[in-house]
Length: 110
Length: 122
Image (cartoon, rainbow over the protein chains, first blue to last red):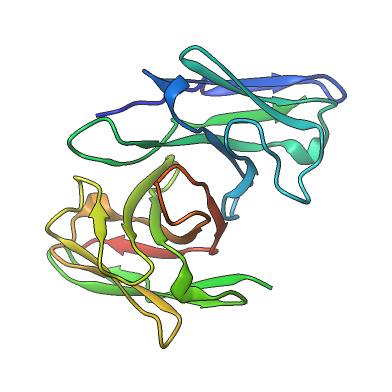
C-alpha cells in the first residue's frame, strides 16, 4: 500500500522557521494537502493543491513540492502553531484506490 | 456557517454493530462527496470511506471493506457509517469530512466535524 513518510517530530524556537517533509513514490504526479490538528480538535486544512492557502490561514504557512517530497513550511513560528501536521494524497495508482495520510509530525515550539 | 456534527459513537462489544451519523448544515449537502476518517487513540489519521454526491459510488479502505457501509440521505442532509463485525482495532474517533471537489479524488477535505468516539471492548 502507498505510504507517505513524515518525520515524527520537529522542534522550533518562536520566530524561527519550521519545515515538515512528506515523502512518497510519485508524489510529484499528484496533489498534496496539509492539515493541522491541535490536541482534542478536528483537523484543519492549511495548504491544498501543494501550495495554495485557504482563506483565514496565515501567510506564514506555505507549501512546496520537489521530486518525491512535499514540504510544509511555517515561517515566524508562534506558540499557537504547536500541533500535529499531516500530509494527504489521493492514491489512484494501485488496484486499491484510496486516500492516504502521512504518518504525522508533531511540531513543538520551544 | 458550514458545519458537520457526528453522533452515534459509544461502547460496543467485539463483533457488535454501530451506526454513526453526520449531520450537515450551511451548504448544499447533495452536491458534495463525503468521507469518513478515523483516528485511533494517540495515532494518526486513517481514511475509511468515501461516497459520491448522489450515493451511487462508494469506496472503502481495505481494513473495513466488507464490514462497514457508507450511505447518505440527501433529503435529511445526513451521512451515515454502518459498522458491523467490530474489532478492538476499530476503536477510534470517527470524523466526517466534506470533499471540496467531487470529481477526481485529488481534492482536499474541508471542513471536518469534531468527531465521535467509538470504543470496541468487552
